[in-house]
Length: 378
Image (cartoon, rainbow, N blue to C red; front, side):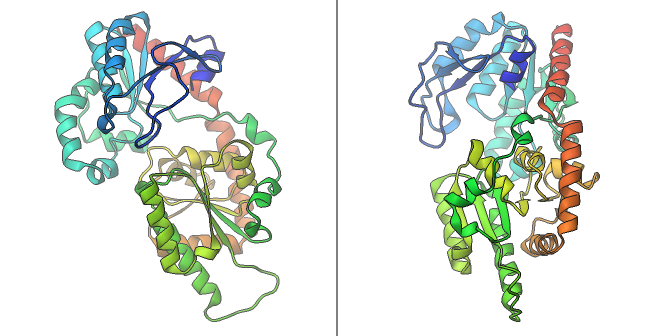
């Protein structure tokens, strides 16, 4: 987003902490001074606590410097850095836009620190949201879910966009299969996203177990078809990932599951190229950027009704929908594995939808208009 805005002449600074995941910090950044990236600057500030990521140097910098900007785009809620960014803008009279990143959705509000979030929202976060120039939702589903909270600021729905250039010349699937040879010659079911309870990977593992059981009972030997393999590509909290691996072992499917860890760049694109069916079985997604990348890569995609992008794209025949339960996921995957024509149709429709609606250029044009309107309101 920052790179794309800089390419159309916007001077962009990204201001954040040095947080790099649970218990970790970025180790190679200078604090409080601008660090040059691709067309924009980034300022990093040290965090003093793990919980809530409190950073007092960040707070001081924001209150001193926020007046130097025409507009501030705040990404996320329920975080110290985003809360104090809103406070600084509100108190210094600088227009600001808030993108909640889906944390106001019903699933997140009810399933993650429910009481603490309810207290924080009433006393701290809602006043900041109410005084924003605009709340930037990335889907109508996200906006509808947040509407129940009575936020007074004007809503705007602007989907996220991605840079389509890397997907125009996809690498060979052999780059992936050379690194993970167990996938050679087998139908590949791919999950590629962050590993988190919201993503519902547990149901996907259970569904894969059902799928393998259905293929072997009763036994129907077919030398022209091999059993599918499940690729779990992503990283998460080590304890949670260990629990997922233990679940796969308990289901007896561990030899048919590959855990790749985080993939990026050419290796991620090659994983998409090797994929027969991409699955994102999340309970809730305010948008679904990983699904969008799979669609852009030409994958036949299956997702659940809690994923906003999937729900919207299903109307165009670009994504197959199922319920977030293991039996429904297993049935849908089995159908797609058995019908090459349906997979090809999904992939073709997905490419068309992504080109028409979700390019980075189209998204940034709309964001620019949002900024102009926000400045004009002050």
